[in-house]
Each structure stands twice: as C-alpha cells, then as structure tokens.
Amino acid sequence: MTNDTQSTEQTDGFQLVIDALKLNGLTTIYGLPGIPVTDLTRKMQAEGMRVISFRHEQNAGNAAAAAGFMTGKPGICLTVSAPGFLNGLTALANATTNCFPMILISGSSEREIVDLQQGDYEEMDQLAIAKPLCKAAFRVLNAEDIGVGIARAIRSAVSGRPGGVYLDLPAKLFGQAMDAAAGKASLIKVIDAAPRQIPAPDAVKRALDLLKSAKKPLILLGKGAAYAQADADIKALIEKTGIPYLPMSMAKGILPDTHEQCASAARSFVLPEADVVLLVGARLNWLLSHGKGKTWGGQGHKNAGGQKFIQIDISPTEADSNVAIDAPMVGDIGSCVSALLAGIGSSWAKAPAEWTSAVADRKNKNVAKMAETLAKNPAVMNYHSSLNVVRDIVKANPDAMLVNEGANALDFTRSIVDMYKPRKRLDVGTWGVMGIGMGFAVAAAVESDQPVIAIEGDSAFGFSGMEVETICRYNLPVCIVVMNNNGVYRGDEVNVTGGKDPSPLVFVKGARYDKMMEAFGGVGVQATTPAELRRAMEEAIKSRKPTLINAIIDETAGTESGRITSLNPQSAKKK
Ligand code: OXT
Ligand code: ADP
Ligand code: MG
Image 1 (cartoon, helix red, strand yellow):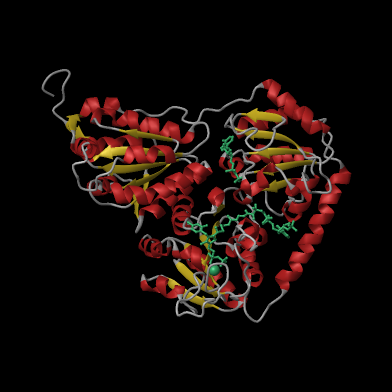
Image 2: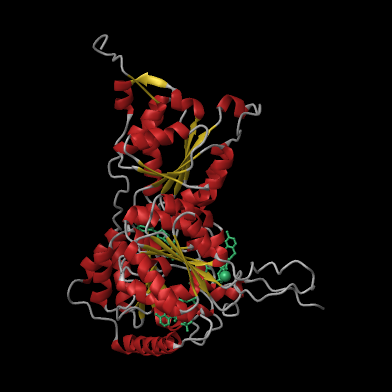
C-alpha cells in the first residue's frame, strides 16, 4: 500500500470478468477461443473454472442453453467476435424462444473503428445485431463496469420469463488495468436473481372456481413447469385433484410417464374432450394447435364448443395470445401451484370418475396397441423395434439424460420412450430446430454427470456431429444412437428427373457414422438388430465411454416431417 486509499495491486478486465462470474457461482463456460478471448479461456481454466471448448460456437451456445434449462442459472457461452458471435447467435435466439436462461459473451472489435466502419479485424456492430434476437443486450466499455454488466446480464436472463442475454466485451476492455481493491468493490453478487412472483388472490380464486366447475378437467404441463423445479407441488396438485395430465415433450418425467393419471397415450382424445384446461408453463403455440380448431373440440370437431382455459405463466402478456384465457394466473409456477394447493385444501372433490375412466379406457387401448407394435421384430429394424430397446434402457437408467432430435427419430422417441424423472429430456423445443444434439448432450453430461443417451436422426446428427471429438476429448459418458435411415425423413427418394444428382433428401447409403467416433478414440458400433443395439447401449452405459451406435433403420419406415406432415405447404392446384 502506498497510502490509505490506494493499493499498488492492480487488476484488469480479464480478471474482473472471471471474478464477477465466480462470485455469482457461474463456473462452467461453454465456448470457443480465439482473438480477443483466447487468454480469457486460459485464465478461466487457471482460476479453477471449467472451460468446455467446442468445435463450433453454435454447439457451445446450445450447451449453455441446455445448462440454463437444467440448472435455472444462466448457462454461459463465450465466443470470439463477428463470425464466432454470429455462430453463437442462433443458439441465443433459440434459447430465448424456448425461455432458457443463457448469456452469450462475445469479444468484439474496437467501438471507434467499428462505428466509423474503418475495417477492423472481424468488424461488426454485434450489440445492434443481437438486440432483436434476445431478451436483453449490454456492452461494457470500462473495467469498473464489468460487475454491473454481469449482474445485469444474470438478472435479465433468469428473472421473469427466462431467456437469452447478449454481453458485448470489446477487446480493449480485457487489458484495462485498475486498482485491485476498487475492482473488487465494483463486483456485484446478485441477490435473489429470479424473485418469486406471487399470484394475486383474486386470480387464484378465479382459477379455483373454474377448475371446480369442470366436468372434464385436464392439466397440461409445459417445459416451463419442468424449468420451475416445483416438482413436488405439481405432483401434489395432480394427485390431490385426480385430474388427468398431459406433458409436453420436455415436461415428460415431471411425474413418471407411467403415472396412472398421465394421458399422453390419449392425447387426441383428451384435448378436444376436456372442458377446462389448466396450462402450467405451456404456451398455446403451434405445438398445441394455437388452442383452437379440431384438435381442441373447436370448429370442425363433433364436440364444437371449445374449452375454458386457466393459464399459469410468469409472463403477463402470454394470456390471450391465441385464444381467450378465462382465468390467467400470473406468477412463478412454484408460487402459483402452491397457492392452488392451499385453496384446494382437503375437501376438494376429485375429477369425476366418468371422465377419468373414459380417459383411462382410451389410454389403455392405445397402450395395448403400442405394446403389440413394439413386440414385433421386423427383418430390418424400424423406429419401433429399435426404440423399444431405448425404452427399456431408459427405464433401467431413469437418471440418464435423454437428448432427442430428428423428425421421425424425434416423434417416435417422444411417444415410445417413457421418462421417469424431471428435466431429463432435452429436445428440439419450440422451433423444432435441428442441431441441438451434441451441444445439449455435452451440457447434459457436464451438468448432471449422469450417462447421456442421444437419439439422433442421421440428418439431425449431421448438424453438430463434429462435436464427437469434444465428447471424446472431455471423455463424457455420452451414448449417441444415430437412427440411420439414409436421409431426411426417409432414405428411399430418387431424383425424379433421372439426373445424376441424388434427391435433396437422401444421404450416402450405408454411411458408417460409428467410424466418426472411432476416429477420436471413442467406441463405434454398428447395430442392425435390436439385440445388437441393446448390447451396445448397455455396454456404453456401464463403461461410460463415448459411444456412437450406427443403428440401421428401414429407409422406408419414416414419413415426411414425422408427425407434422400437415405443416408442409401444398402446391397450388393446377387449373
Ligand atoms: O392420440 P393419437 O391416436 O393421435 O396418438 C398419439 C398418442 O396418443 C400416442 N402415444 C402413445 N401411445 C401409446 N403409449 C404411449 N406411451 C403413448 N404416448 C403417445 O402416440 C401418438 C403421438 O403422440 P404425441 O407425439 O404426443 O402427439 P402428436 O400428435 O405428435 O403431438 C403433436 C405435437 C405437435 C406436440 C408433436 O408432434 C410434436 O411435439 N412435434 C414436434 C415436431 C418437431 O419439432 N419436429 C422437428 C422439425 S421437423 C423439420 O423441420 C426437420 N428439418 C428441417 C430443419 C430444421 N428443423 N431445423 C433446421 C435448423 N434446419 C432444417 C430437418 C432437416 S426434421 C429434419 C431432419 C429429419 O431427418 P432425420 O434423419 O434427422 O430424422 P428422420 O425423420 O428420423 O429421418
Ligand atoms: P412447451 O413447449 O413445453 O409447451 P413453452 O416453451 O411453450 O412450453 O412454454 C413455457 C412457458 O413457461 C413460457 O410461456 C414461460 O413464460 C413460462 N415459464 C417459464 N418459467 C416459468 C416459471 N418459473 N414460472 C412461470 N412460468 C414460467
Ligand atoms: Mg433420417
């Protein structure tokens, strides 16, 4: 010390970024090094942070998003400027769309040069570009503001409706020196980053009154309900009311899919038949046919008349986004569900038996039909005979994480593979986006330390397949099953013109994706029968070695776009 107020010790931007993240418990970084963040990644590692270095920023970004969903803390993705930033941006936008908290931190070029467009190295006005694609965007110019910048990014990512935040750190910031004591004092430990939001008592009463009036009530759980980590109260609400429930794909496992009140196998029956639907962290978007039409007993359905909706959501503007919401409950799911539970008390009459037994009848019929199909063992494996194996493996390993993408590979897995625990299923989400696979798988392994099973369409896998090297490098317990049907949806299309190019929808026939894993020291297996697939998956789970199983699937087994064929635009009729 030279005098009472000044220390001789200095700190700098690099150190303050690290200190601010660590102070807030953010110690895992998913990223890709290069100018101007190379040293930052080294220093982070030297300071005890876990730095997972990817082959492409989109996968690092997807990993950060998945980490955010799993933990409720913002996942951090770190990239270089312009192209690296843009590569990460798709993941940031996808995280925001899915309401997953993440922070994309990108190094950037110098403001003075960028603003005058003088052609700096990787010049781009990144803040302006990020803004419309995320929940919030900030730039820090001075080292003493790093603490505030990171605090604002954390709060923006996790409070209210979670989402993606962009934090722009220009190259010059990292080397800026300042007094160490003043630097330390400038950091902020964020208190209560995602404050509870208690629903108004009149909103609770309105919801309870409507629920009480229902003859055919239904509870619909979305991924917001999984994210909220209010598992015990959600279970209590469902069991105390006896109401059938339907989980959206990433809500599978909040209660085990084998729960007697789970109505997944009667989906197309309960949606139009229910008279009051309680939405818990699920939006009435395309995945729910916007709450209207035939799916919902509206126009075109024999029960036309429509439903009444109660909607629990943290976003006050979500209600009425597609159809009228009769009883909106704005608040966090934990507080809302516990308020409903308190109102229900012990004298609540369970859902009418006439309704619950009708649901059970339909469900049992579909389950029996499914069991019959799953028991078949066709000469060439199809989605059912292969996923029947995955279903058993997940049942035997309920703590394993399941990552899933593709079209048929996605849709069949969703309906065939039961989940038993909350937040174990990660998939394409709200955008139906391909490319989340390996990023999600890496985060799933890193954040949970549990075995990860990634069920991947062969097309889907191609979007992030190079990350098998990352999986091998970090020796992660990831078992990838490539459902190889030689193409997008199917592998049997031909070029209708008879020309030399293949159809746009097919790949090299007989491709050996398993060799990709072998190239990096992992285990590669080709499976042509359910028995071979079972053996390879069991071994992968036991050994925890990075494994890729190339599962040969009948190339004629899939349908165009899986279960969403109807969304393909039709050609205009010829006059
Ligand atoms: O009630 P009914 O009778 O209807 O029956 C239902 C249930 O009752 C029953 N069921 C059960 N029965 C018995 N037992 C149990 N346990 C049970 N559970 C359910 O099963 C049926 C179905 O139930 P489900 O699934 O719950 O209901 P449904 O009606 O399907 O639900 C509706 C939806 C909308 C909620 C659901 O379908 C859904 O979640 N869909 C998501 C669809 C989606 O997101 N798809 C991905 C996008 S497709 C396309 O875009 C693709 N692309 C283009 C592309 C994309 N996406 N991204 C980018 C960056 N670039 C391009 C591409 C390139 S997919 C794709 C690749 C495809 O090729 P791959 O090789 O990867 O994959 P393959 O197709 O395998 O070749
Ligand atoms: P799904 O695709 O599974 O139907 P969506 O992504 O459409 O789910 O919906 C998730 C909803 O959950 C979003 O509207 C979001 O605002 C809401 N949400 C997320 N976290 C919470 C929370 N903690 N409390 C209340 N609502 C939440
Ligand atoms: Mg395919």
